[in-house]
Length: 55
Image (cartoon, rainbow, N blue to C red; front, top):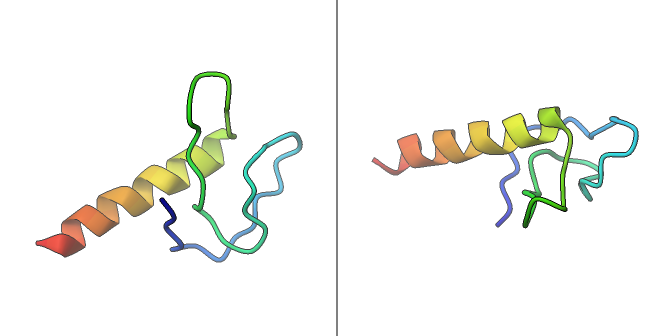
């Protein structure tokens, strides 16, 4: 799944988010695949916005 609602690239050191130009684009697949809090929050904000726009 990809969602591109922000034009902010992740700059958190060590974050494995593959996004280079847009966030959110990635969600962890399991507990061993973790992104930073900012990426995770951006992902869920985009999901919520997409759900609201469906109705």
